[in-house]
Image (tube, rainbow, N blue to C red; front, side):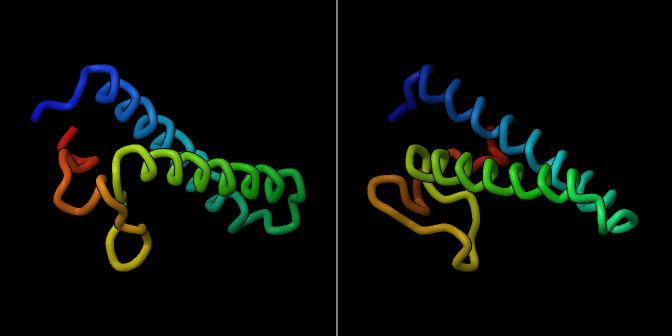
Length: 89
């Protein structure tokens, strides 16, 4: 059964947003390695970390788990055997 085009677009949009937020988080982590007392950067990091969790929960509630090793819940009907996986898009 083929996934509706609108769902594919939404899935792609959420994955893109996750990648963008991940990029910002990595950059802030690197910056904070050398500037650990920068409260503005710490606040930004925390905001993006919360935003990432929201995006992940939204994605997983609509399209299934992103991670294994207990980092994502498996819920019916979007479980492990549902595709495509995020890297297959």
